Amino acid sequence: MGLKTVLQNIMPKIITVLGDLAFTGTYHSTGTLVYNPATGTKTETGGSNITVTGVMSDYNQDEVDHQAVKITDKKLLIPAITLGVEPKMTDTITISSITYHVISKRVDPAEAMWVIQVRI
Image (cartoon, rainbow, N blue to C red):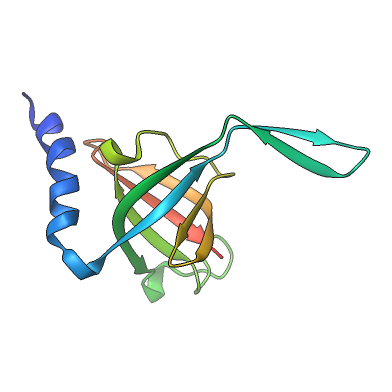
């Protein structure tokens, strides 16, 4: 077992140890969206909801540029092994009855942790 695999497997345990610093939420991985021009609405098929645990933090002042990163944006750290999907810009996550929209995403070099920028 390589270091990459060890890191991928240990991240969910680290999040669990953080206790009240961690959140549990529902990640909605968007399926196929079909636009209906007659009604002006989009219909989704094939989406899925995933219960995830992670850590949420604010962006540091030096990271906020008021365009790509707004002061109200949040940074989520979610173990990649527990998310199980690659985040998309159409996805959402609901934490404590607040729904956030995925703005950007990246994964760490070991592919153990997703760093997801979200916005209300």
